[in-house]
Length: 312
Ligand SMILES: [Zn+2]
Ligand SMILES: [Zn+2]
Image (cartoon, rainbow, N blue to C red; front, side, top):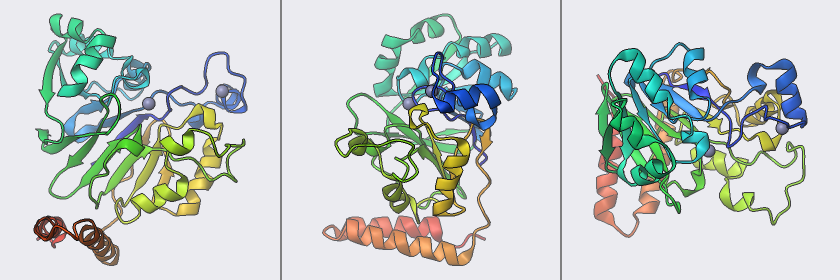
């Protein structure tokens, strides 16, 4: 799988209209990686666009893409406000775009955006799917994972027999994390280490409750994801791409911050020692998690082995 991060911004783009901060000034002056549009991902193997931020049309035209399928994570404007791009895609192809939507998200999305209009006009063919259950697109099993959040938010797990990936761009703290190992995970960025942040973040700030810290994020994903890409990069964090690169480098090669147009590199060759280490880490996690439920533990261990056993 070769997912493409079309947009890497957090809830607001960089540069932002009227903003004179150093980051927006840099983005206006130099462009390049400092410019970030709303968060979205394209998965070529499934011909699937995840989320339609305000800049969805620009993102697709910039990469000369015309996906046949769209799915949404949630109804916040940075993920959904550009959904009229569906109309353009349908007009261009002469057939409706397939919209894949976890059922609980439908009423919220339809209340805030002209979703039903797109359906009535024949631009969108909705497939409402149950959360937590995989459906198949172009040979890829896609599972919407429900966050424990006050309104419907979903992450997406992508699986083939050989590769597994996760896109969880926002509200990450409320996602019950899927079991590893994942070949790639593109997830909401954590709070950068305090010594790298260009401002003070007081201990009472609510960010501490809603985000992982950098160290927590590494702890969560180490052994669970071979390649970790932090997206939803907040303009308000005011850090340049180079400053973020330096933060990622503290963790090592497997961690990166996203930029618009980033192709998530193909999985590094499966080094046997690393595979074994990941297997043992996952085994230990399962044994701890189901210590009081031996039956479930055995089932989880069997599933783990199915994923890890050598393939001919
Ligand atoms: Zn967002
Ligand atoms: Zn700014």
